[in-house]
Amino acid sequence: MSDNYSLAVGCIVRKEDKVLLVRHTYGGAAGQLLIPGGYCNMGELPEEAAQREVLEETHVVAKVEALLGIRCGRKNWYALMLMDYVEGEPQSDGNENSEALFMNVQEALEREDVTHMTKVALKAMLSKKKGLLYSDEEYKEVRGNDFSLFM
Image: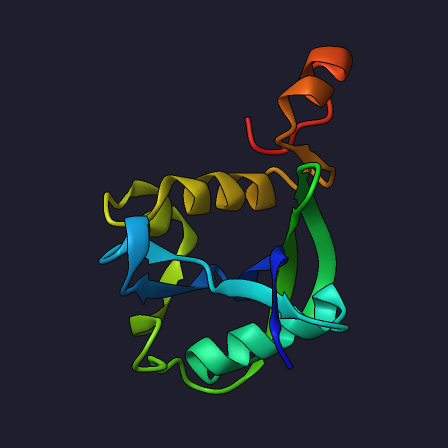
């Protein structure tokens, strides 16, 4: 099944006071820690993609609790899923990441090797703010930033 490069998920997997992070191996985030995630396969629901991506990237089984937010563009979207740990020990997939681990949320917020996007997502989780994230500048111009999750 081919990937759909415009529909993607990001996954905040919680285990007590920790979150699941991976050390990315490519692109602008190479060498940095971020939440797992990726593109939906054609015909795959966001919840299915979230569970699959977490399992593929970390060998951890997690279940979706809620949609924390969504960033929308005219031709794509990125859904931020809040997930609960079920089972498994974090392991690198040996491809997209070189490390997978659970880290205390506060430590992740303070570390310089955690991506800005991940820190913003973690802050949104801590604020318990559930809402929509819009990246479309035209929408923000009309509606303002009241509906933005990542500010």
